[in-house]
Image (tube, one colour):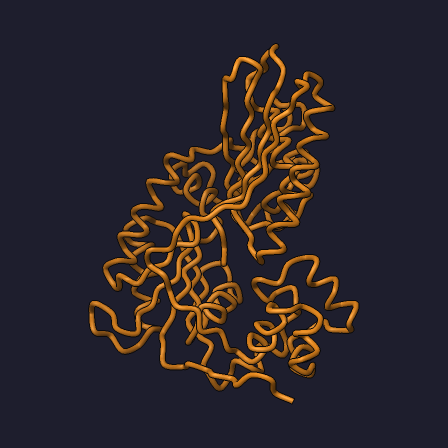
Length: 355
């Protein structure tokens, strides 16, 4: 029985642009000796005692199983011939700015999700082009001609489907999902590929015997609402290609974080890491609660003399799980300059959300 009416708006034309291995691709572009080689954006674990986390990896490195958020140590074990580069985030931000300039030639309805990813509503665009597919091709061409980088594009009538489409053919992909195709495509999709469905939600769905979009489509609306609350309401609609969230050009940068001040100063590394683990766990639970994933993890540390350091690490994929947050926080902490004075405050924040 249908509890709430289904309203499917198919009038919009939404493009999702996702750059291909962005950080690694910039390094390969700027250094011809790196082209065709497995490039890994992380500090070389042979120089750091195995410390560090992978921000992103070229497609050559991905063939060896190297992924973002993986420890640099594991990346080296999987791909010892990989070229490790610490990364130049100022340069990446600069290229990201050039990317946004290209987007705004076509529409002002641009919602950046991260430095290398954005939604564009081109229903009413600046060039008066009726075909969203043609606009996506033009944007890909502009990116290649001007930045010498490649991007994958997904086109559909809502953000949810456009995001799924952009991930279907990478790298250099161009995928269109039409309204009449949406439910069939979603039916064949594993539930873990439904963007916004976190690790814990996937586990709960598997416990219910739900593994694909078709399994979701077969469930009653009230069953999902009883099990997941408001998220169940959304899941029922997403499985049918319904998601009417607008592209928000002035999207506020939000964050979820936890910090704690200690009356007894922390001196030992094992005590500090124990507290980081506890903070990572709390942040991960809040991210799942609010159905958020973020690409940037920020560590804040304040010492006995009130000297405060804040350092961030951006990943190529949005994360939500405790293990990754903990691992990245550890890596950032290990890179900080050692201080003799004890630690009086620790904080972990996840930002740069993918909605």
